[in-house]
Length: 450
View (cartoon, rainbow, N blue to C red):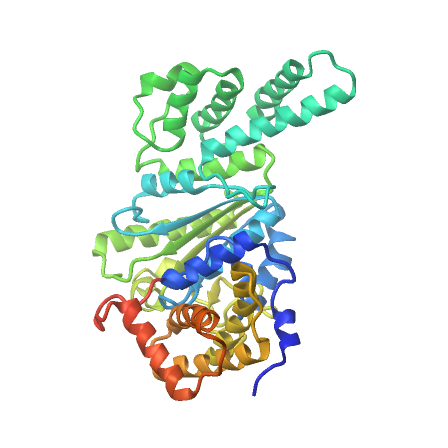
């Protein structure tokens, strides 16, 4: 029934630092939610989808074109987890990435200005220092880019014997911004000017100019007179929110990034929006799909994660959108061009999936807590708990329940001593974990996505 301890090592990345291990345990143990960083350490079941995205899109399609993918999965079925995996992959390929949570109040998809503003706040690139978290936000990304360019030029000039490498480096970066970045094809001239002038303001330490342009780039209300001296004549609004979003992706390539990944996560369970709002959402999605086909979003991956009800109850009401999204088969090696990524069709059965996650959690727990566990014993425990979780819970979102229960269980094993768990005890642990996650309210919102 159980796998050997050596097989655990094969399913877990060979190296993980204590900081990442502790972050994973904290997220899983506190709320059962996927870790924001290090998600690949516990990822199982969706590898086929990720391989297709890597080889067919990041290696080919996204080198010059764009692509739209609809990610489908029940709440708690792994949508957020999957988007984090795609984010990390995009970072490795040099993309700027924004993972944006959509909700009716904070960021409704029918409000294009709020969508743009959320993207501008969440945009980030991979950091070179493994001990540092990404700095989120378009404007901080631009500051870091300018600083890196100056440092690289200064280092080269210093090696060449330049007497004033710092000043000469700033001069070269200024020329690059004005002559090369300034020629980037961009639908909004105002957006292009705002990006360039913001970078120049940071370079020249003109903090007043920098502050006004930063507010504009973040989608905050800025009077036209505040920024028109720098060639920014448009005001951000719901009428031009998607224009600005397209312009952002166009400027990313002009600034030297490999591309942009915009990953939207529908986090609200309640899909009963008004007919008017539903139509706007449908029209916006149709527009994005068409823009990807026309290459107006250069080197851009656009993902929209929704529950299955979206395809059943909303999309059929809009024939133009339905025609674009309807597909006989989901994404796979045999159909890499398919629009749909269906997280209900994974490589593993539910019990195999949970067991594999448990196998990966054991060495992560050892690193985080600086302990050595009886690997074979804990593998058997993971399998018993996985079976109890699948057999006692009828929701598809049992993944969150399992990871939280198993992390708590390993901690108990560490404190009270290691021993095997039988079926009845495993069922009791799962039921206790379910009560803790739901707060005892069976009718409430079950689990956030994992």
